[in-house]
Length: 300
Image (cartoon, rainbow, N blue to C red; front, side, top):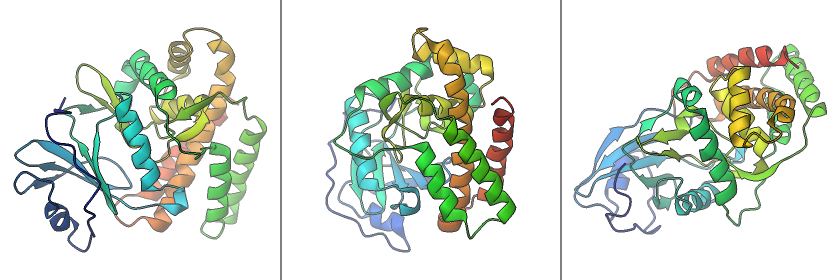
């Protein structure tokens, strides 16, 4: 793990105005010990990230902006990132300004789906700790059913009538099966790439969608993103609920897996309309999620 408290805490000021050469503007901030070197950090499908190295060490620089079309606002994300750091679950956010967020670098492995499937108890405990220990003053609530309804409205003029009818029917079916809510402050974007392993412990990153929500969604989201089998989902539920009544949670879990996959597919198509920062095949990514959605729906 990178040093967390070895260098001075950066302030949120002065602000940086990003232009056609954002890295030069960031390098000019009076934050660095020497001129930083920037190396592209792979991963992510909506924001550009770099590892910045100066004489003190390494930092993760993320170039980003508000995404109103996803109800994502960076001030809120920064507040959650700081709360997660205070809980010992995330790297420290040391600078936040218009268009840029800078965090301490962790010498850690980014998990893949297979890694998550192999380490279900530890991942379940990480999620449970986030639900129990992270708190902010944010009033933001994430409701996957409301999100999917909003995405369907946004896509009405961009997708064929047949696809819209198909997605709308799936959304209506899942909404009618909506399980009882288990209220928590959730992450809501539990892609394997948002979990890091430094060899001793796990960390969470990227809190764009974090807010008040439903534990059932985070678990379904995690399972759908890591392509769990039913047996692996049962293991996840047993670990998270400490083997108390988790069998009753299995049908609700499957509904949330489906709602998560619908959300991911629709999210990607909405992103295709708005995000130009990344050269990503958003349509292809959407179809991958819709194909997995069909598999889950076959069990409902």
